[in-house]
Image (cartoon, rainbow, N blue to C red; front, top):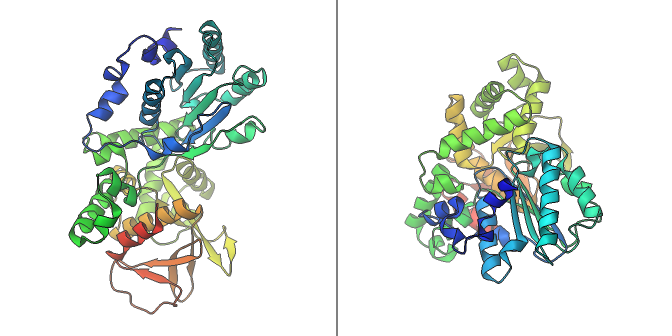
Length: 397
């Protein structure tokens, strides 16, 4: 098929990396790095890997770099298959593409194939076709990596393949963290920690640019690309971008305080169910995170929630799109919440006569952009503005 052949130039061109648009753009960037998540993928047959994370984080670039690495290590180019499924219109078309891959493997007498299915969640119920092919034995000696830009239709997909994963791994790809930002700029954490001026400069850069490759490289369309990716996910979910815009505007003006779905709904004149559905969509697409109330070790999901953005560039960009301006305290607190979420998998907050912004993994953290007005219990770590970057480095992400 022409679509597959166009997407796999290494089949025909010895110097394909000089012509591949994705790698040409990557080579032209001032700030570029070999994604560390590539080392988490299994390349041992049989493997079914799942890679998911927001758009614009470099998943496709990482896969192209992996293909380059594989072919340079002696893997036959004809045994590597890359399919971009973003434009595939139907399950029937997806099946035709996969059957073509199976035929090509047989034609080329490929012993072990490396198959990459990009943006597979664009095809509804794709897993039904692929599971059938796995059960038929068409990929029993291969390494298959499935990629998607949201948890919708993908993060639960491993549950559809019980006993069919082999050595496969689940890998989450997110914008770079603050410690990672230091490393991708060619610096070591050790040298930055003891240079206050450099640490302050990098911290301010992170609060401004976040961890997306385009924003870190100063691309003029970085913000537009992010908004378009969010709007695209909203349309795919059958939702209205204008409603998302309104909800984001309401939420951002309330951050970093805890809020209820009802308070947002009343302000906008919509139902709290609508607010919940849209915020769940934004959570599923890695735009926002939720911190639930916890007391005495008991989680209380029905109480007010703290909502935070999972990258500072996302917050700034989507606030501008919604016509509001975020508080600096929300920006800084959100970075702490996100880093603790990555470290421990869940984050919470607590409030009575005093408030603890973030509780995770045995840590209790209060973020204060100004001087604390009260004394906190000894087990609460109170962070000022300049304490935060050193705290994030200590987390070891």
